[in-house]
Image 1 (tube, chains in turn green, brown):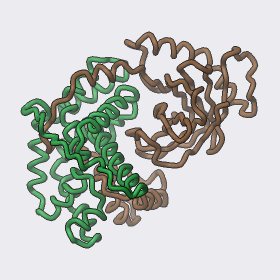
Image 2 (image 1 turned 60 degrees about the horizontal axis):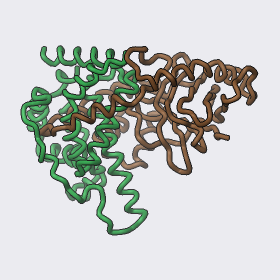
Image 3 (image 1 turned 90 degrees about the vertical axis):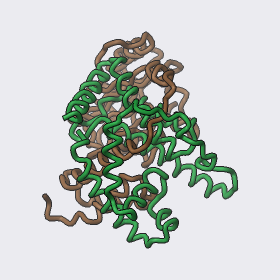
Image 4 (image 1 turned 180 degrees about the vertical axis):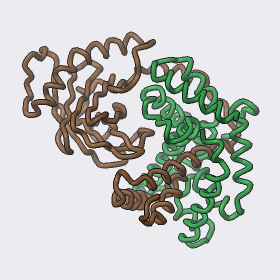
Length: 191
Length: 228
């Protein structure tokens, strides 16, 4: 029920942002900005780049809120998806650049800022965090490992196969099974 | 539920949602979905479900404090409006100026769309210019005033960008694209306003992108226009 209420509140906030309501924007930013920054910082391993990504994503919310489609899931999942896609895109671009330049310059993810330096406890989305941790904990370890390497470490499935030593087909299967199970576990949260 | 086999698409979509596909695998996914067509309900359901699930995974992490000034910086940016987009509340003075300029030139761009061969539009002010985009189906034109922020892009008879996709407009200078915003057509008609000074760009381009409006183009342009 709490998820229903927060989901409805978020959708209402997005509608208000469509009307230029700055307070509505600040409410969503306060609710999900900290989780968004944690995600971007985890994927990118660089705080300042993570902040750029989060700013881009929330700027997109402010400039074009009509891109949120209520039929496609919750506002919070949409926001986090924007952040994740952008962070992964940045990682891929950097990897491509490094392959082209074929140099040994330290890349995006090698500075390895510790994103947990400024952890804020008990501020943002505690119910979501508990539910997702429980769902991840219910996965078989090999499925959880694949999901975490791809989603949180920004590795491609090919890189996951290389890192774990598992055949690519096995990695694909584990990703699919893991995502099916997560989808079933989190259905109530995505409103 | 469709009778078609969705196993390949489902597997690719699951990894796509996790960010685990390489560019060639992303292309494979797009090809597979294109074969099923834009009206494949099962494809859309799978994509939406996996995207929504992946979007929640990030909440597993401990939240990190965000600089409160970031919200101020974002709110300082003027809005990009679409035909079906935001209302007029609480806009900055700069945005208001852009909107007024857009209102003045909207007729010019509309005329250009209706008469795509016309480069000099009767009634145009001395400072207004209109360019017509090439490529793709339907018609797209942009009106702007050189040296001033603000441009209006209008189109008609445009095809839908597809489920989970939007058109993204780019101002390209040299090889550097800058997003001028995202917009989707309604009944084939599109209208978008940007606050960029497009006259400093070499080329304008429109691509089909994800609805999160990536910071750099991920697909080839569907429409392009050269800035004189």
